[in-house]
Image 1 (cartoon, one colour):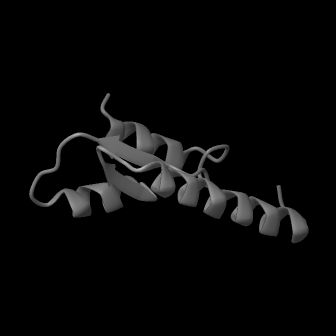
Image 2: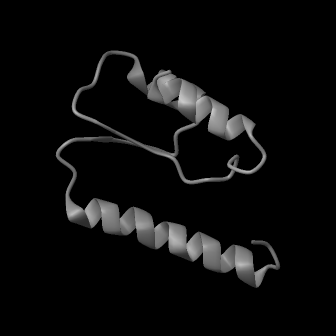
Length: 74
């Protein structure tokens, strides 16, 4: 199973369907954006990734979780 299949399965499972899923790879290919979107990834990052990008993603996730908790979710 590759990462695309794993992401697709995680999106299909109720317990993980709303998880933040980020692909991190060292290469890219033509048409990859459609494949990434179809699999259900939230973000697709190419190495090397700066620490600022990772911090930003985690900050966005924290804000989302906080908003969900305040709304009575999670």
